[in-house]
Image 1 (cartoon, helix red, strand yellow):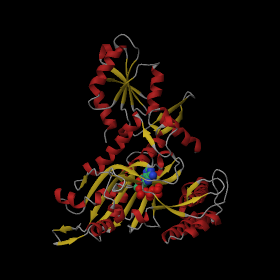
Image 2: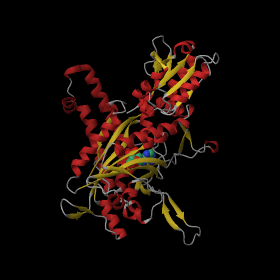
Image 3: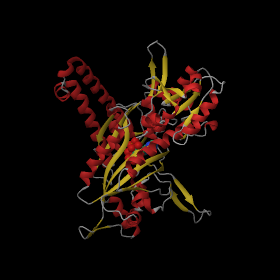
Image 4: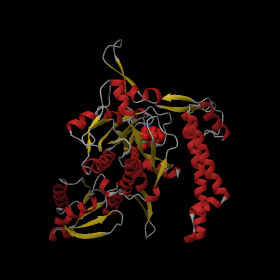
Length: 503
Ligand code: ATP
């Protein structure tokens, strides 16, 4: 697993997907830059999300709010007082950790042990296997799962009541060690606020203290009435937005999974009070379906219903993904009640209510939110698509089998040789296709090596121009995943590619 993750990181660099930020100065921890291919993949994921959320829903519109917001926003939202992570240091290694993540990792190990037992039994009993029955009757598996639940529940309770001493006690009881040194010598647990502060204004004396937004959601809440009125929106309706968010994360590992500057894709759905659970269930299912539509495999996703609810929520679930380092949160679906709108009403003194013409009454809507990290989406797609395949002849190839709709380059056009006018024909094909797709030209090296390079880049099609092309206006088109080649007419290329790469 660790090796696979290392491969993902080095492949991302080697093929122009992700670079460390300011690398020539030895980088900045948990900050990354997207390269020429990464920027395209990221844009395509963002567009795929936007299309399904905004374009496909008559009652959802999109906005683009500023990163800077009036500082009272964060007082109202609760971020100034409660946007904290529990921090713990290891006294021997002097390394810093998030206490809840240490405990979650421990619980996940128990879960993995249970899953191993389940898989062994499944292999043994075949079709007759009943997972639920096995879990209740197999003492060892049952113990793993019960212990896992007990640990997570105790942590949730302790954090909720701010009983940080008990969080530390739990780490000690479980004998959790620094994963690198094995040391179990921990400090007390403290709370650490994750917001980045900055200043607006030239003179230090009267400069205004600002925060870089730690989530995009608040830009939607403060614009709720602007959008509702100018767009004549009727409840239920949604406001979507994508954009940068910033968090001074304590643990800076796991590549682009946890960054200090990252991008979110969020949608707040405003509903009539009392109807929130219906829409909460609806959005849970709808968002899972969206993920599944990418074809990365049902087994890689699972729901995790929250035991510990944030201060604003009355129900919350994560869609977790099987990352190279195990199942972790990819997206959150939260029923946020009227917490945010009411809080902004209080702090601003402005009414943020909706007039329901059918009810002939004013009320503060409830909100169901879907919030997914664009960079985490990127990692889920990229890591799962990267494969090392052994071919029939025993040789191996590296292929990045990205969903075609997301691939940075849809087709590479390759003249078989650099002479006899073949490059000119290849250029003509590109000039025609580039209006609709990102297409690349490559004439360097033998054609087999060029295929391999495009496989590793994730390009779904290679189009090869050869001498026969000059006679009959046909080319070969090679499919990345099957490596199958077909002879087709140049005029049919657009249709063939379009069929594969459109939603
Ligand atoms: P975690 O528990 O992993 O810190 P969170 O519960 O704080 O995440 P939310 O506040 O619900 O996350 O944010 C919504 C989404 O934004 C997450 O599901 C995740 O995809 C993304 N996200 C949050 N923090 C980061 C980060 N530091 N780097 C990249 N993506 C992030």
